Length: 193
Ligand SMILES: C[S@@+](CC[C@H](N)C(=O)[O-])C[C@H]1O[C@@H](n2cnc3c(N)ncnc32)[C@H](O)[C@@H]1O
Image (cartoon, rainbow, N blue to C red; front, side, top):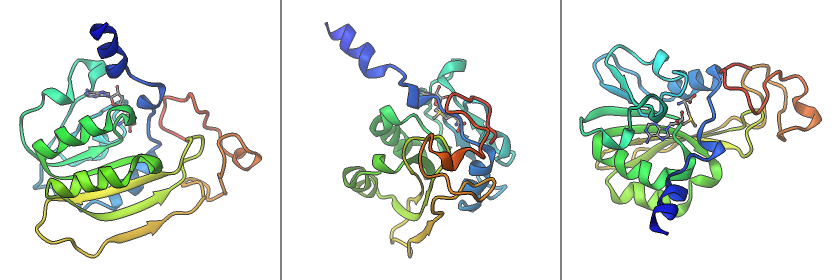
């Protein structure tokens, strides 16, 4: 019975393997102070949307390629990416152990008050928050930039509204008429609009 529960707990849900469009990665990285001297880990490589855009001092993990994030012991200046939402608590707890800054793209409903408290209890502060709507993704997304600093800085808050990051058209629903302009399908694995 326990074995079955473990399998269910650790299974990859469909929402866990969703690749981030390039425009969104560009926007995400524009919120992070990328510095050639820092070390970076893309903990959930996927198709490399984040990894390919990070500077030289970088490594990656991806369970599908046999490299498990939870086995990482090395310390990094930054962890950056779009992690699997179904194991977000476990993901955050491991992130706290191996880096001094992190920035993740997560579903807005996944940024719960409990998780915000969890982040703060570990000595990190959310210093930037940006809300955006990615066409075909179920809920709005939020980018959080968190740093292990003694004092919280002034939070930078940016709401990108309902517009598509590519063409600027409204993209409210998942399949509504508003996203007819968008060639991207929910099942697409290639990171493009
Ligand atoms: C939401 S996808 C994002 C992929 C990619 N970062 C992107 O933004 O296009 C999450 C990725 O995390 C990977 N993943 C899940 N569990 C993992 C683990 N324990 N270690 C490393 N990667 C994992 C999944 O296989 C999936 O590719």
